[in-house]
Length: 260
Ligand SMILES: [Zn+2]
Image 1: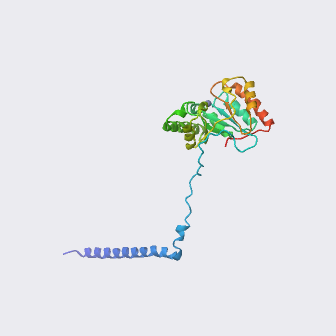
Image 2: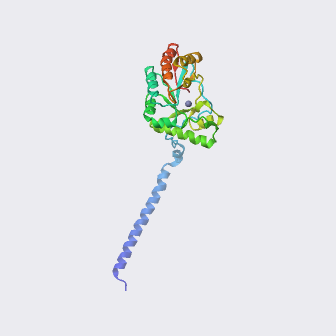
Image 3: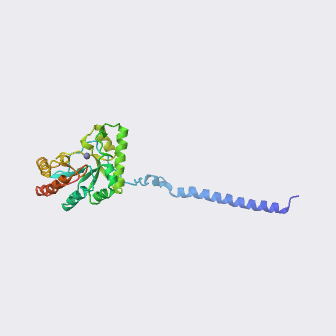
């Protein structure tokens, strides 16, 4: 014989079951009725759904061409300094640029950037732009396989980004100007404009400050991209030349821009 409490439990379970069932029916009923409340404009929420907003602005694709003029017209020129940063030279160049309120591009070697992050940060803090000049100043990079080339460009760019504390690296320049079509293309694909030059006074051969100044003056033209060096060896002559060239260019109506 079953004890009576079994029946009491059975009764209780039946009541709970009924409550659950009723609740489910109510909930199921509420769902469709909410949707139906939209009535004839039920499709509008779908049609007017906001577009997906990207988290960061998409950077425009970079043309796989070698950039050798400043763009923008007028007597605009760009100064570029390669092979640094160098603790003996870069601060002196930066002082001169600040004195004349000129912004320039610094094509840095990854290893030098890693060795002198303070200088990289100063370059960026003072409004200049970074240019990737490979990890070790490798003039043979243009002949590497696409995969090796790509990895090296990204690695050297990452060294600059890290040394700078997260600054953009807008340009890439092949050491010794040894470009290949694949190198220009890879540079663009990696988000860096391939940056050439039009005025090269060969300051790295240390011909004397006067010779550097004269060569730049003779070859200067609107839209010029001037190649100078703030690293890779003793550059006192380059510093002295820049000290003379900045006022000379300003006196002749040249303005200083970044290559675009
Ligand atoms: Zn170089």
